[in-house]
Image (cartoon, rainbow, N blue to C red; front, side, top):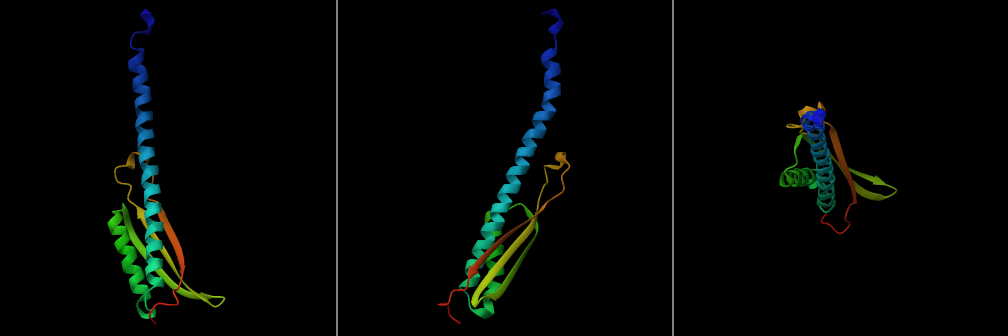
Length: 132
């Protein structure tokens, strides 16, 4: 029993950094997952909005709705970009929206990870009953 004096302090010194790194890693994974879901959601909203818009305003409305969706979600993103494309495949007109951004990793720099670039994608068939 006398030889074990201070062993808890030594264990705490060894395990504390590991536990801190684990907590920071869990926060990082949570942030990545949240941003990925926000990007897919913004792409879905933008594609749906664009598919119901007039042909002349389709791209603009898709951009605006994606920007609005991302700002409402307050996603920790930098360099947010939206690409809205209208095309016809086998006689079916569709709109495709691709959203992408870099995840803000401020506060997680202890892991030494660079900000990853994530993207979301959605397609919608253009509504044939919309106004031309």
